Length: 156
Image 1 (cartoon, rainbow, N blue to C red):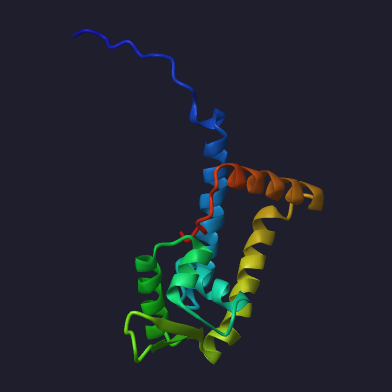
Image 2 (image 1 turned 90 degrees about the vertical axis):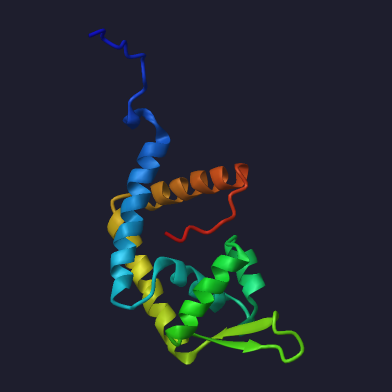
């Protein structure tokens, strides 16, 4: 049987993306586990947190703009949040396609607790970095996001 010649191939560990994914995946999985007891997914957390920063009432299309998600994805997430009692939806009587959504009192009380879990998660992963190193890492990642016009919020 003839032996197949292998061409030169770079190792995984020489790629910046490998190290970014390794850290990012672990940070995300840890946060997902922390959120499990709240009954909220990471994707739902992103929607809730964006809504918390905005006006009292908004629309799914504005949430889609803020997150970079499709309107369909936002609609599904809003439906799940509605079922969980975390948002209220009010359909326009004139045009059923238009909806207002707003956070419930339950969500408004929950979001700071979830934000605290996010802070705790960051601290667990990045506490060994100096403040300067953290800021430098954030600046580099923000620069890359801007250069590549990455606007979609990570939801998984």
